[in-house]
Length: 152
Image (cartoon, rainbow, N blue to C red; front, side):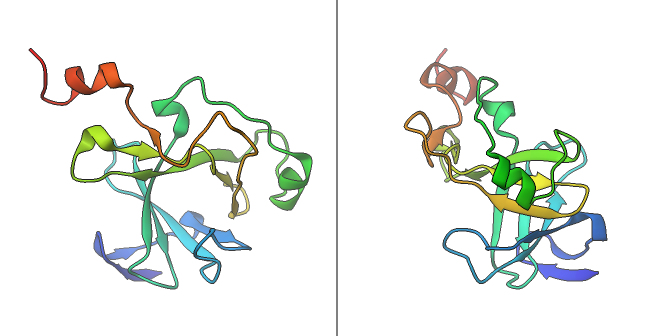
């Protein structure tokens, strides 16, 4: 399937990249079909592109890449809804917010995206946790000066 996107222009979207969010995403409940698009071959960051509205897309990445200690329990009803069988086909992503100043980039650890890569079913699951935030900093304050052109 070919699609015109706002980030990458016209691209071919393979069937295995298509995800179905039965309830949409919070704030975008009317949008149910998305494609998970690799930006560059070696990149861990991908684009979650709406297939219904070409101007709606999100940067996503593995929360474990930025916060290896990240953990939560996925309730049985969510596993059943997505038809997950253990960890087979399971992928967890989080939406990134990257403003002009990279040191202020955040990740939504409060509402991870739960994917079943085997059947294309997906859900944004909102955690009941005070530990995580929808705007959790990607980098710890001590990483900002060493990783982003600062402090000598």
